Structure formats: structure tokens, C-alpha cells
Amino acid sequence: MDVNVLFIGGTGKVSLRCVECALEAGHKVTVFNRGQRDEALPAGVETIVGDMQNRASYSRLGDRNWDVVAQFIVFTPDQMQQDIEVFAGRTGQYIFISSASVYKRSIFEYVTTEAHTAVENPYWPYSQAKIACEALMKRSDLPWTNVRPSQTVRTTLPTVLNEGDVVGHRLLAGKPVLVTGDGNSLWTLTRAEDFARPFVKLFGNEKARGEDFHITGDVGFTWDAIYQTIARGLGVEARIVHVPTDTVIRYRPDWAGPLLGDKTASVLFDNSKVKRVAGDFTCETDLSRILSEPVRHFKMRSAAGTPYNTDSEALVDRIIADQLKLGA
Image (cartoon, rainbow, N blue to C red; front, side):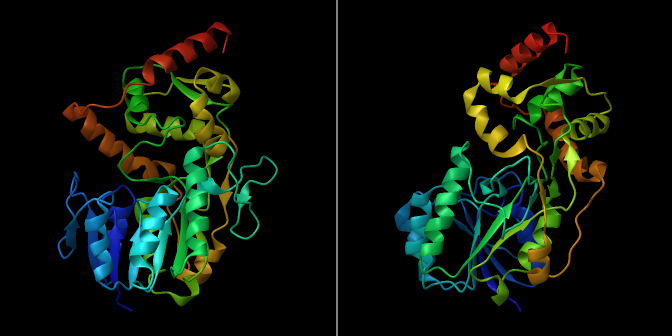
């Protein structure tokens, strides 16, 4: 079934592959965003340039009827309330991109299911806001479908502290890199194109209405293996220094969110629910292939001298130096 779909976002590391997949499926695709993108949208996409913060112009999206609205850039309850006011009664399906970080992390239960894993994150304001958005959406008149990706990769290097290119440049320079814990906790990485295929099959799917889904790969990788694979892709060896998570957080308390609230405990996902609704699918399981595109993009940025955020680098140097003094 061909649908008229509005992507809000549409050029991000995940959403661009979803736009491409929707076009390949024969859907009519419109993208709304600020028009500040590094990568071109594919031919055949209608673009509407605007800003969600401009309520007057954003509300005009509600003057059109959409079969599907795919919302990638709502992060606060105020933004969700705005979408309820704009799209309730004007779309056949509203798909909210939430986050798998809303699930409670537990060392006793690391296989996550939509039905049995609690939605609770006491550590991370980002996840708490997503939880509040989900609750507000579910109380509204929107015909909702709730999608929770875990880490989905395309252009950026997956790293423990979300410092991305800092890790890549440290590896190239032969500097040690920081991994929390013992490096053996399991983390799920999903390529954007592997996420996009089942995601698009939720469009106009009656079985998806009023349902929560995560869409991820089925296997996990240790953080040591992730860093070692990135290093091999760059032609170097990784010098990994392990630091206890609680120690890292003492240096910078706001890291408690993405660490204790997401990446410290092992986490795997049971994708049987979305497979029942969208059809069976497979994700890449070879780590070198999963990371090949992020590594390629990093190499291009490095060769071009693209500026990157180095705010965390001095602190990482200090944490590593202090840990090495202990004989790590």
C-alpha cells in the first residue's frame, strides 16, 4: 500500500535511510526540516523548509492530510503537545521515534521485551523526557505507533561517552582511549539501513496502531570489541584503559545518564514483536561491516580537517592518567 508520508527530520543519521527506503517502497515522501543538511535528499522527495519552534509556520503542516507522520525530532513534552495540536485528526498514523533508553536497565534481566521490561530511567533526563512524551502521546487522540531505536549507526562512531570523533582522533594519534567497566558488557549496534526496512513496513500497518516496538539487531558486542574494530578500520591498534563507571561519573556527574541509564549494563533486544507485525528481517551481525560506514565517514571528516568537539578530551586525559597511576 502506497502512503503519503511526512518525515519531520528526514536528513539525520537514521532518518535519511528511512526516507530512502520509503521512496523505494513506492511511498510519496515529504520532508520537513530547517534545510540545514550536509547530505542531499534523494530525487522525488518534496521538501518543506521550516522550524518546529515557529509555531505559526509549523501548524500549517496540519492544513494537509497525511497518511503517516514520522516524527524524528520531538524530545520534550512541549514539542509533543504541539504535535498533538497540529496532527490530531489530520493523519492516519503518527509514528514517534522514542528511544530504547527508556527501558529499565538491570544486570538481572538484560534481554529487553516491549511487554515485560519496565519503562523507567532514573538517571538520564533525555530518557525521562522521552518517557513523558510517550505518555502524553498515548493519552491523546493521535493514532500513534511508538518506535524505540537503540544505537543506530551510519555517520558517527559509537563510543561509550558519546564523544565520537574524539575517540577516532585519539586512536589515530596513538593515545589511550577510555572504556568504562571491564569492557565486556554487551551493546547492540544496528545499521541505519537495517533499521529502516522494518520501520517503513509499519507505515499504514493496522497491526502497528497503538503499539510499542523496538527495532534493533539481535546480537550484542562488547565495548572492547567495538573499539578494537574501529581501530582496525583506521589501521591502528586500540590502547584501551578500563575505568570503573562510578569513578568516571565522579569526574563528571552528568555522564551518569548515558552510562548508568543506558550503556553500562549489558542489553540485548528481543525483536519478535516487530517481526510479527512488519515481517521477518535480518540485521548485519559482522561488526566490521556494521562499523565500516561510520569509520569511512570519520576518515572523510579527518582528511578534510572537519572541526570536532574536544570539550571532553582534557578530562579524558586526566581520568586515564589517574587510572594508570593505580597500575591499570
